[in-house]
Length: 491
Image (cartoon, rainbow, N blue to C red):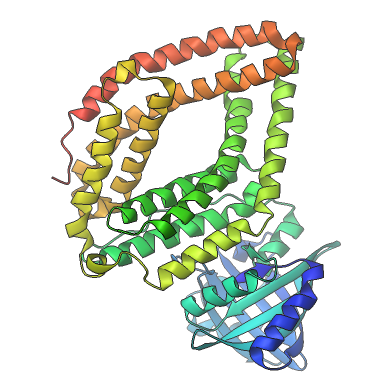
């Protein structure tokens, strides 16, 4: 696990780790050279080949990015001591990727270099010895370079790693780091921004306990959340969207956990912080949708008129403000505190108490899905008479139901699940179109109030927006009836 720190925090971090370890750290100068073909064939295949030089020792490492639900990067890794600064590909013979790397042997050359001073402390935390390594230096790719200031916590049980990170974060401002040095080298070399990561749902086994199932789901949600932070900070709309989805999914999981808990105090704290961070993501997402989707569709047939261009420019300016505010929020330690706190809570098996430790998912899933379905059913009554806020509440309840169905889908026949999900998605699409229209109307009114000269073009937009909202509302009643009459597959 990597944590980032500012230059001015280094001395404080050293003091705390020295005190915790009972002495000074071990210092090492590490120069790591990464090898690939000019067209980065290894990187594109999810592999990295490097040689690390520490004093007179040379260590060759092959890494393959793996799949997992841990917060730390999950990689398969092979290491060998070699004698030169050039890769020894004969060592790769016993790995699954040896032939793939050997096939491009003639093309291999240095592509980027990591040059850091490492100070390693061995710290006892929560009954386990944990390595805490401070790296400070840079990554170089051609003429480009990026500073490296990170704390790597490793070689211990997950509970101890997260616990030590949280304890340090309480006294030193730290942020979770997602990008490995190899990834930073790749971005330096290519100029490519950090990419958004679409969250995946882990496959659950019906024999898992309720506690193990929720642990798996929450780890997956936290993974999606933190791995999209670099893209969101860079202003990538998909990164922002995926972080927001992860927030909603985590809140749904915590809500399901709360149904079996008598003490909601800790869960309420998590929910409150997730909601607060979600608001900033939601505001940025609203402006993204308006600028990138809604306005181009609204004025596609109107040409490049001055007032339209002024409206678009005003909207883009507000979008930049929302992105700047979000970037400032994500730059604080708050998200790291939340993620680490949730991670520690998971590892301590603090939920659900009692039956959750022994009840299987297959036994618990029907009741959990029933609760979500009943709530959506209550909010959808008299759907034609609902206010915009009530329709939005229905949409949120249906999204939670959809998440729940997705989590437990592997426990049921796929055909029945797909029929239910398809009808749920149709209903959510119409509710989403209606919500987009409601949000767009609010944002355009905000722009119109700040720029009175935009009133004529705001009026054109309002008429177009009213038509699309009317269409969405017209389709809503029949979609609701079809969904309401669909038999829950878990019964």
